[in-house]
Length: 122
Length: 499
Image (cartoon, rainbow over all chains, first blue to last red):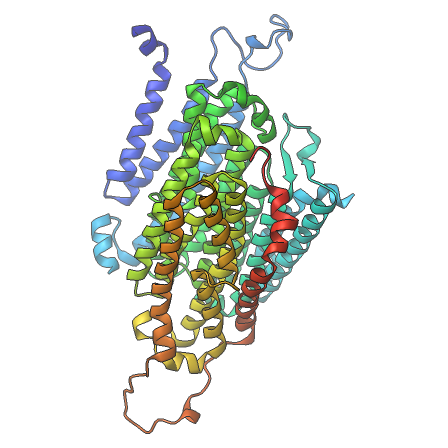
């Protein structure tokens, strides 16, 4: 049991981040804080990919003469990392669009606090 | 030679168009619209050619960058994908034809950016349909979603708030999909759909695969506005500019439903989602709840676009119900309903846009029969689309409901049959509210002057807006009459193996 908990410590952090992110998006009243929650949430997914691809006693996926190319288990799978580069770009783009929306909202309603905003939207 | 490249051409046309539109737009603002329209027409031609080729010769697989799958990214145009591209690009073409005056009126300063973003939106949608790679799918989902947020954000005063909420919820959906994909990838070691379908059957009982499937279904359920994950939809469709609603509502959520079909039936296998992990049952029950909820909420709305938005939740429920029944008839019903609902909902949203252009608002309680006299053609189109939504036989909407009801009877799922019937009645209630006012209620005269028929001048919209609306209405009738042809020639060929 203890081994299971310690052996998967990376995943526990991911789960914690995921929960914090979701909680921030759902419970926080300020729209900027919601956005921060969203970023934490996205980061946790990215971390999950990275954590899942780690390997003990393995090296970067560039053929090392000392290790040889016969046994692929000595190398880390690079694909999740490259996928996550794309996911990071997506996350940055989403944040950009979100900030543009926040600026629009602030200009129109002069507030980013959700209850006040709902009040002024009526 | 060109046939082999067909799959990649459709998203590529839109991608280039978005760049060219913004480039030309900087130089001359008036050029943005014709370029966007030309690109959509071109893509529609390519999509039609693709459909014809796929039906006569067979599916086309395109290797992006020359890398063969499963290492490289594969684009696949099979009967299902070809059918969906034709539907989506066709509807987009008609909506764009209609768009010029509405965009000039509602967003005069931002027309160039608007057309560029709508081209990006179509890039995303057509890419989602054509890609055969699960991660590439995620990227296209995000392209479509990000441009979708922008399309929602231009509109009424409250639109950015609705768009921001849509963005938060949409990002949760996409992230869930990505997380689920990680579980699938860790187990199968592949991202190619066809390859995953070969590897997964041996791993079906693994908890990681189950979690992955569930996360993907929840993620796509959010994008599809499957009840109870529909919260973002009504505000987003109501406050968006009229053209955006007409573009988003008929085709945006349908593509998420397509992803569900693709991933569940082609990726994970029919047997798996039907018996081993009864996710199909869950989808059909949620959809049935959504059908009733959406219809009841639509009855309570006073604003026409808001009513149509709630009715969208109900209608996507039909598609989900057909997917969830996981039988050939259910599949036919779902795919046919995607086509029918795309026609009906775009027609209805265009009617709402016409009414807004002409009288400045679309609040149902203030409608009266002057509307019918001033805009006879628009109201005729509305009647056709609304009859089809209710499911009156010669109209298209009847036939997809018919297939769904048959599928329900076939599996003795009487609750679903009852839901389909009840929802038709509820549809009748909320559309009759409009009809009653438009066709029967005498206008309340503000100044009691002598009322003569000759004094009523036509306030019908311009031909460029009227033609797409009537074409869609005629399309609804035509699809109703030709539905057997569509089902036999196209949809039956698209039924996934094992269903």
